[in-house]
Image (cartoon, rainbow, N blue to C red; front, side, top):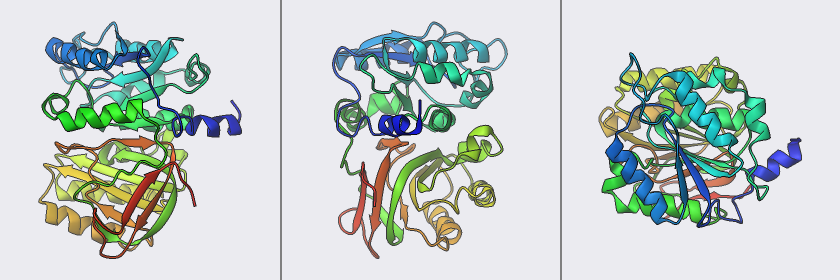
Length: 327
């Protein structure tokens, strides 16, 4: 595909919903293991939404050694490739995170996946997931240049426990994206300003882990989203240092910080972010709401959007984060 065609693909879901009833979604487990119970529950949610659900052949296979992986690399990779390359696939849904998605990247024939990136209606297929799936979001951005959705995953308990999360994911799947506001109820302005550009990012530790990889060499100027879970302040500090030294922070036009669930004390994390990001000369939002929080919002990636943050603004006043617009 040439550059104009790829740009059109990135805008595909701004004016038309990614999915409609009857579309096929393929479930895969590229990272950690789930259970038969959580898989059955996840399938039920998506079938109740009117979707044709196909489950990867190996999503419940045990790894011969590593209990933290949902099967051997080759079978997890094969499920992902088979799902994306199925000509009837409209979306590939990652069941859960954990660890392991980055282990799949070097064995993928990206040229083959690129050839299979269009649905039968000509629009791009959609990848969904969060946390460890950040590795796939980055790879799909670089190698396929398609829009993806960073969202809570149906195999996780939070998807079961919080109806608002299920409703939010369903709206992102069944409604167009243009103009949608994604400001959370606790959002604050760390640094005021205005920015526009491509939405990229995800889990901070995964972005740091990917530095030095082929995917890390293609970094657009745009709005960078960052979140994490279960990390001490010094580790968050080290991840930010890695991103800054690599240029990932200094090329960002704006930064949006999500949840820091069970990381260091919130005031400690907030002060760290203020110190490390406050001098970059770009607008910065705090606690936007995506990530691992029990009420986490979804974020579209590899699409354009705008960030407007007035001094002293909160979620109720002075903050605007909207999809599908550019300066």
